[in-house]
Image (tube, rainbow, N blue to C red; front, side, top):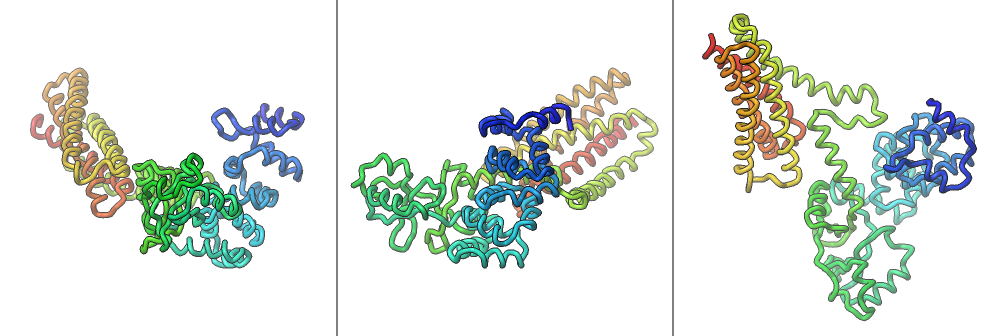
Amino acid sequence: MSRETDDLLLKEPPETDEDLEDLALEENYELNPAYVPMVVDALDRGDSERLRELLGALHPADVADLMGFLSAADREELVPHLQPDLLGEVLADLDTEIREEILEHVSSAVLAQALGEMESDDAAGVVDDLDAGKRAQVLAAMPDVERAAIETTLAYEDETAGRLMQREVVAAPQFWTVGHTIDHLRRERGDLPELFFDVYVVDPAYKPVGACPVSHLLRSPRDTPLAQIMEQVTEIPVDMDQEEVAYIFNKYRLISAPVTEPGGRLVGQITVDDIVGVIQEETEEDILALAGVSDAGRDADFAGIVRSRLPWLVINLVTEAVAAAVVGAFQGEIAKLTALAVLMPIVSSLGGNAGTQTLTVAVRAIASRELNAANARRVIIRELLVGLFEGASMGALLGVATWIFWHDLRLALVVFLAVLSNFFVAALGGILAPIVLERYGRDPAVSSVVVVTFMTDFFGFLALLGIAALILL
């Protein structure tokens, strides 16, 4: 523990909540590292009052962040100090691995209370993490209406709109006026969603025909029919993949959208706060997939990390062995001109970096729907031209450096042609690999790196040694 932290712990506890709040977070809203040992110290002393003060100064999202910095033993001690309402909000923000661990230490009765304080989509996510036995106990302890909402949500496929949506919505018939709607909202305030942006206008079959933003309701006269101020809605099918939902929200700049069953009946809504989480989750998955790893998390175990990474390294070993076979086929040429052994890794590495640049741009374009069959040909030609230009530029630079070191113009020409060729292959692989993989239903972020690395290593060695054999030897 640092001297600064020791001094902080020895100081008198702050007098007000404002002092604690200022101390808890840094200017960038990250949890102050010195705050964690303060919580640990209160746990060690069994000081419930101090823990209540420390946790009370934090937003539930910051309490969830705090959990990630505590040891498993400290988390187990801290959980009983969380009231059900706070526990529910914290569980919604926790990393999956930590949440599963914490759920083992929460009684079914307390967890049922906490779930009752949560929105149906968040509650369903927590219940989904429970083992079958505890899930049955928790659901049995919940009121019938809340239990039915969670069970219905869990009936949908994972990572679909049905799992993402909250079942609590505000709906009104077409013939209502603004006044009717506002009076209804005030009467039923206890049953309204905690957060909503639109009142969905429905027909007699409970199908959405429009939406009235709350801001429109507040600005319109009471006698105005909803049909006059409602806006067109973008319906989300209940079985739509969450990545598709995120794309629609981003494209049409939605704040919320109704979710409908196959027959068109309104069954829930998705709000923008849910979409932010989906976008972050999908982005993290793509970034990790490009490196061939899964999300290790702060508390990932050794075996899990190894299992996620080792298979891709084995695949890479096989592809590199094939590339090395090219080197073996040219042993005689390398022995005659040792400069080739020095230049091989440089040519290969330059091509690999160029391929990774093209691949990253292509995967991002596919994920954001900026690259499809309509513009694929133009993008491919553009990337190939960029690859040729960059190859000519880098080949010229490396060729000049080769002439300066070895005073051999023919060797410099070999290097130039090898770099130019490898950059062309890198651009070709970097743009075509993700397009082809995506077309055949494979995740381009997962498999493309291995393909491009193999192509640039294999062709880098082949181009340099093959051209050298033709020109120099």
